[in-house]
Length: 252
Image (cartoon, rainbow, N blue to C red; front, side):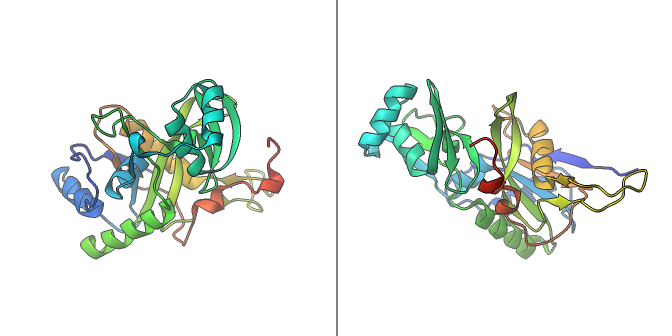
């Protein structure tokens, strides 16, 4: 039977700007008695990527625009935070007290442009932005892991997103490298030899969600998950492969 093994690499130190995440990953795997192999997948919480890339911003340094002040009044948020949300977004889609839904400049829809206070620093003035280009971050990690470990692995960067029609956040991929994030099953036969008509699997999102189950999002200190046995196709995939084209979007 197919087997999928997920291991949360606990004990990762608090990541600082400039840290070598690939080296930290291999050190953690060694502590867990694991050896990286071809076709493995490593899933990284977007937050550790952002920290290593120095995506910190102090709210006291933010210059607030008139547009940000107007939206801040509607959503009851700090105008400086709203300004950062606008800077990180292509479009504001919905606003209500406590929440702004935007299309992030990387193309996905999320709350508050993914900007976060939690697990960032012991300083309420500091916030963390998502990686500037999570696909590029994933490719860089993949290449560094190949350099240090001599193996070809896939990398998924995940983030926690809400969903329009369901409660609870789930892990989704915001950056990928080394795999095709979407598996097109159309044309393949079902149990009765009828061709599938619409089936397309979000492989990268399923990997991200599985890893989130053991990553945690509070004080677990397990922002990296090693996966073995993932049924994926190697290739030059991109986040954009997962994003529904605007002309097919029925809800905006």
